[in-house]
Length: 270
Image 1: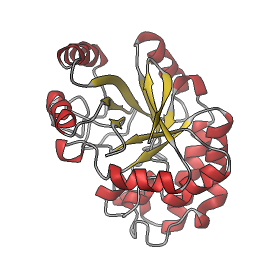
Image 2 (image 1 turned 30 degrees about the vertical axis):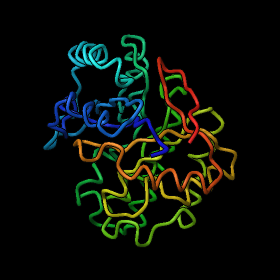
Image 3 (image 1 turned 90 degrees about the vertical axis):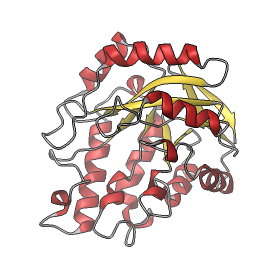
Image 4 (image 1 turned 180 degrees about the horizontal axis):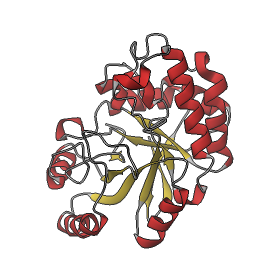
């Protein structure tokens, strides 16, 4: 495995995982990873639903620091967060960054008009294309409201495709270029990373999120900064499909990926 750091994973501190944090760490060690970053969900003001996406940071940090010390001779453990961006929350993320010493922040669009694409309701009453366009438009407009200093990478740019009625059957970068290009340019202009999230393989897309075409375009535009994570919620998915991720990145001319410590990026060779 050429990718030795998994920088997107969840455990019992996230509302959609029941896996003990220590079990995720032990799985990473078994795989021979050099480092991981726990990136638990925090979606402030998420609409009421089946899952609570709050995060008890006052419990999270002490537990991660304890585990970091316990496994310090076996693996590097970063303390991160996946923050669900919404148009009214830039100040909240900035305040959290001042209060807690995160290593890494993923900014992710999860909700549009108070709806999560995970649920079919998001797609009701309109075409799949209209639903995808609205997601990308909201993602760009919301991202532009946040200070680049408050996040490090954009998580799963085409998240919506995982749950569309036809998933990625009718989807490609080229089909949505007018909506995706502004997002890529914004990241590049602000020195932010683009995440390669291998969760798309788990979702049956046979592609990462975002898809290969998006990474090709990112590279064409001059983008070089990439983070990599499997979006694992269970130990079986730690480091999932990293061989495929490495092959895609290398074929497109990427030679490094980025890992963060104390919000400072370090380039690691593929």
